[in-house]
Image (tube, rainbow, N blue to C red; front, side, top):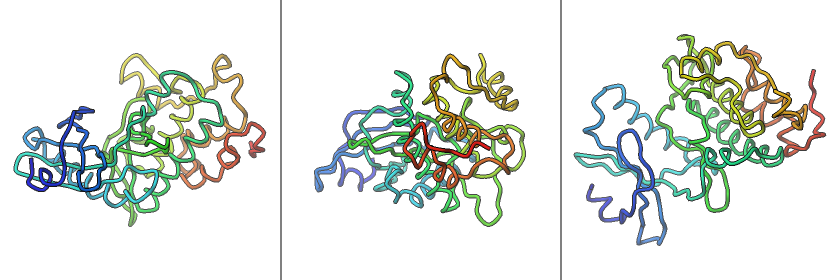
Length: 277
């Protein structure tokens, strides 16, 4: 443990497990506050690409972390063995746990989506694509405010620079990522569109029995709204999903356009008057 971390914080019980280490609950005696400490073991990172991603994660999380819907990175401590990221502690169940219990009403889903898209739009304004938007990375604080987390796959896209690496999670990854060509920050809008579909329908829009089958389904992007799960979902909500899950990237909504859609601005009211043309 680094001297600075030992001096300023008290590490408590583990609350999560990551690819390269653990997440601990920790206490800051001076302020009387609790935080989450993501401890990454350097010995577990043997791939130079993974090392570069870790350095980028810290840099980009610091850049975007000032938004109320992004998990705040409070401090970074490093020693010879580990890197410690001290972050805002989110105690409520994440979105994955919430959607596994039931589908949300349109009002509930719109409240989630507005905050998620505010976080994504903030990142995009700063030239950062998250690239792994999924329910597991959508947390909530004690006041039920949404917090976007985990910038381990994030990258910059400003100054005309496109993105190429295959990153993301089956079910939520955008089709252009799988085509091995340059893509844009709109991959985050696609992933958020998948989340909206799941919030309202309880199942992913593109699925399969293996990652390969899921990827094939994503590439086909044959979007449907089965009547048994979407019978009571409003035309306005379906319209927004179509515009977020548009295979043609040039026609897919940006994060800012999603925030301006009538279904979002009306708070999920079913008579929101969206232009469905």
